[in-house]
Structures are given as C-alpha cells and as structure tokens.
Length: 293
Image 1 (cartoon, rainbow, N blue to C red):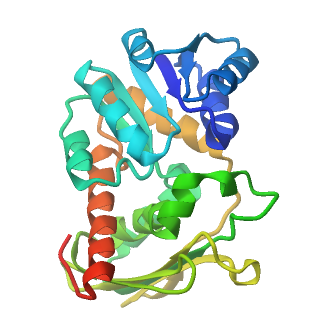
Image 2: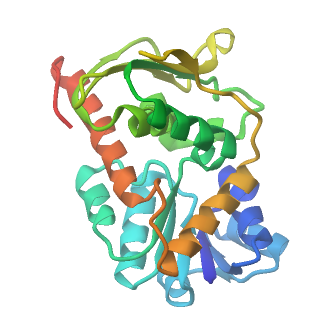
C-alpha cells in the first residue's frame, strides 16, 4: 500500500517515517510538511519525494499517515478520506467534535496511534481486565514535564496551548474506556499550570479519575494507573515499548482492515469518542458544571 506522510516534526522523525520505511507491506511514497526545508531534509533521509502540495501527495497514494497538530490533521484527513484514502492518524484526531464525528463516519479503513494500545503488554492486560469484569473504579495519573531543554516535544505550540488534557488525556482514555465503557457524565477542574482533573461517570456506573498534565514540575511527573473492583486492585503494566514497533502493529491492523478484515479497536470511531469527552471536559471547566459528552 502506497503511503504518504504528512508532518515533519519530532514524532514524524522518531516514529512515522522509520515505521513506514521499515514495514514490508508499505511503499513509502512521499512526505508533505509545512516547512519546505524540513520536508526536504526528512524526505532526503528516507529517499522519498518531498511534496510542496498536500493534495498532490493525497492524489499519489492509497493511504496517509499524519504526524501534525490535530487542528491541521483533521482537514487533511477529511480531504484524504473524501478521495478514498485510508487513514493512520495521530491522537487526538481533532479538537472540534464536528470534525471528529465526520472522520468517524468516513468509509475507509482507519487506525489512530494511541501508541501504547499497540503494544502486546497493554493489549493483553486490557483484554484480561475486560474478561474479568466487575470493576467499579479506575484511576490514571499521567503527568509529564515536556517543556525542558532536552525534550523535543516542548517546542510544540499546540501542546503548550492545549496542555495535558489534549496531549496525554487521549492516552488515559484509551486505557479506561475499553474496560469501563462509554462515559455518561464529565466533571473537570483546572489546576495550576496545565494540570487538569477529570471525574468520569461511566454508563455502567463505574467512576474513573484522571489527573493530566504535560507541564508538571519534573519532580511530580509520573505515569501510573489501576482498576479496582470485585477482583481487587490491578495495576496497569508499565513495560518498556518501542514507538516504531507500535506503529508497525497499527499499520498491520490498518492493512488488514483495508483488505476486509476487522476494524482496529483504535479507529476513527474510537478517536471521535475520545474527542467528545475531552471537549466535554473543556465545557465543564468553562461552565463549572458536570456535562454530558
């Protein structure tokens, strides 16, 4: 399958381009980026054409992989889907609910790179948790400190503007939703810096609590999660993982879906549900109220 890559930032360098180049089922056909110089540099590194026009790259491929801010990703993905191109998107798929729902309705194969969801360790844990059942609560603390000189993602304007709610919030929801199910009510509170607290009431009655940040004090950075219920307390594993390998598994699932196989669990429909919850959290903060996604 011929893939075009959209984006030339750190995530494209570290994950998307190497994964596309390494996958046996992929022909890496070209790169488009907003900065012509960076586009030429990354394209030269992988020996593929650099495109000056996004629609020209869409026209030349079967599928697109996107490593761009969500507000730029969504319009490009919608244009590609309208042209019948399959989609490998980054999270969140959009920050606007209408765009997310439009992406969820497209008639192409899709996968969304909730990265750790494409690792055997987390996939196996969640499958076991679903089979066990009886969970009444979950807690996820996902706090990073990315605005430091050695962190390449600290230069990201959209992360500074949107904060942990939109950057690491999707990862937290990708752990909680498969086990506790759809969300009926969202209550959110904003703390210092970009610290955000979410209290989610799930349709089945369970409650989850998420603490999110990307601008936490370095000494307070942490990533931990657990579920509690009839089976006791189960901590979510924190195994080492390789983002290129994870994207390779996402490509496997996308290629299978495009060939008529099952849709990935993390497709645009799942991505749209995540956007709906995050947007509801923003409304909850603005209105100081509990809202429905």
